[in-house]
Length: 142
Image (cartoon, helix red, strand yellow):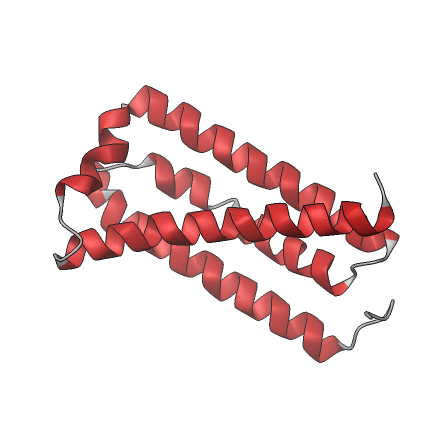
């Protein structure tokens, strides 16, 4: 059972982990997917929203079973949905062939594995945010 006033170390720990995860995802998008403007650049723009969403989602976990946690999870889910819409719309204008270009590389090749890692990290972030949103709504009602 979470208290309404979690200690500062828990908050700081969740915040630091969220920021490191966010910058790692952005770094993969910037270095490996954007490819100096010749790759899938949409991922860089969409990935920047994780810097806001993931820390808020982690605070929604810290404050679960409270009204504050419910508010945090709603904000995080809205930002995650905006990131998805941004990724899809920018990819549409950039060309969906860019999104599937990484799959030309095999997963046995180093670059293919790194690119697949970005896809996996994006999906994990989305899964965490949506799961925390569902848990907060389930415990406190809509």
